[in-house]
Image (cartoon, rainbow, N blue to C red):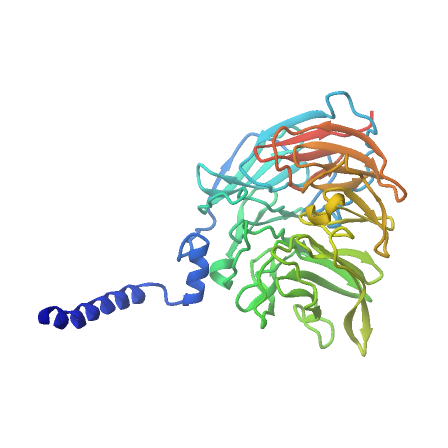
Length: 474
């Protein structure tokens, strides 16, 4: 027994030495808290993704005669309203709109962007364990090329869930684990890549990143919401970081995306982070430098998950909305002593008054359209129309519920998808819910990906396939 007591200090010393050796062998850049966060996401160390990854060309050709564009999240103006360039059919055949083509896709909710007859989709290839940017023909869905980089991801309600940002020169993507990549829009040639988790200590939110990148004036606008940087601007041509917005409060990334806005000659970028909403300058102007905070407020925080992005109403008004009890708030910008500030116009704290769990509401001709969250009681999952005073103009009723599906406005109509792939067309009217046509267009479930409408062609997807539907009026 005496020898055992003497051995205990020796054994403890050996154990401590072994622990110290293991600790010293690890990357000293990560502190204990950061290691805990990484471990909670499936491991203490981040996977080292190697850009530019790999590339493969195929025999697809761009659609030569289709000139419409849907260059990113919510379309050309980032507002969910399609250009009125092609009249849409108000009545559909018994089987629904004609399917022009269909392609298999990886598990997720990522949605396409369209430019120059090409369809761009940041997919996930489970066999290769890689984020894969696919370039398809809008004419027939045939693949032209794909570029991928390895990044192991376990499904958490799917993997991919963002929309690329596309110009005539660039495509910028934002991966589930916060890998940002820029390639040539025509050839797929790699330009640059950033691992936000490694370089900026970004922590992706639950269910992986849903932030859709913004390209504005050939600059990629990103919200890493990392340890030191909240927002940043990156030159698309070179990958050079042009400006950074500090993050002194340690706000974290949400599922919301950055939205551009103009007010009194000032261009700014709005972002809903974990601790509030902020607006930063888009460019230098006098004493204000690009990336400087113009205004912010901490009274807008969505419990559990902030998904919808700010909706720009006009005349300095912005709608903020959320699910999980977040409700909605209308704010108005004002200028005080040469500086910008915001004030609350109205606030709806109950979900049945207004809110949106997953999709971003659409503002169109003086009305705001959204699907109410589940916690709205008897109104839950109904499509609702609200005026700018925060009053309901109408709801779709108990027989027309849409869950978490997407919606957009085109040719004076609402196109709304439910969870199970039922597509409904209704008038975008301010006085009543007026359905015009409906059809089951997808066979899967969780059809939550945003839709894209280009040259009368509607791109929709579920968890396994993407379809192109002919919505044109004969």
